[in-house]
Amino acid sequence: MSRSKRLVFASNNKNKLNEVSAILGPGFPVSGLGSLGFEGDIPEPFDTLKDNALAKARFVYRNYKCDCFADDTGLEVEALGGLPGVRSARYAGTDQDSLANVRKLLGELEDREDRRAWFRTIIALILDGREYIFEGMVSGKITANQRGSSGFGYDPVFVPEGYSETFAEMDPEVKNQISHRRAALKKLAEFLKTQ
Ligand code: IMP
Image 1 (cartoon, helix red, strand yellow):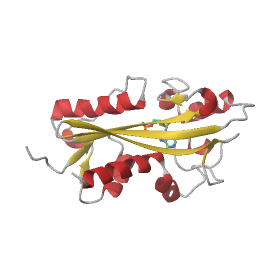
Image 2: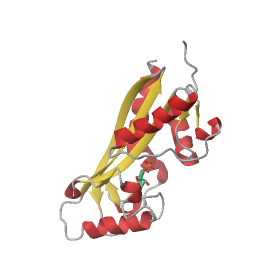
Image 3: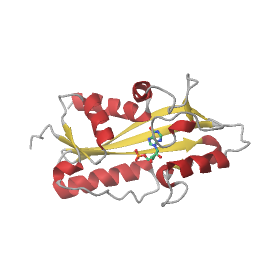
């Protein structure tokens, strides 16, 4: 069976969809879950980024039988043994927001000298029924206070290696060039070109 070139990205997030389309380019058209008539969120119940990304891709493949990929991202902090990691979105509790997550992180790291941290994105791809995993990372450190107002999530407290600004102080274009997501998507794009 020859595969259709269209790929479904297991997300309804328009910003992510735009970023993904820009990186993969016109040779690999991508549509979101909405194109399948699915408007909800696919559960991410597992303890690792890889298991969650795979679960989302498998959900789409099982229900819609199309080539697809899914991502999951976490901020991993050395001094916290890799937390918040897979729990990044709900670190301060399921009913809390990004600000609460960031405050909790700064609280946990108070007086800690080791501020090393990294964002990690895992992408799970299902192509012709076969599964592939891609990983992207950006290393850096957690600041003592929040700085900057662009971006989302932990951006105001993360300074990538080789820079002095936080992700939230940077031009979003610069962040997107060096981000964990970009690194994982570039690997996906390189792989797709070989198929
Ligand atoms: P997701 O898997 O992309 O939904 O990311 C899970 C969580 O990780 C988000 O809710 C954010 O808290 C955090 N996160 C992911 N990517 C970024 C980023 O680029 N900057 C800051 N926080 C991020």
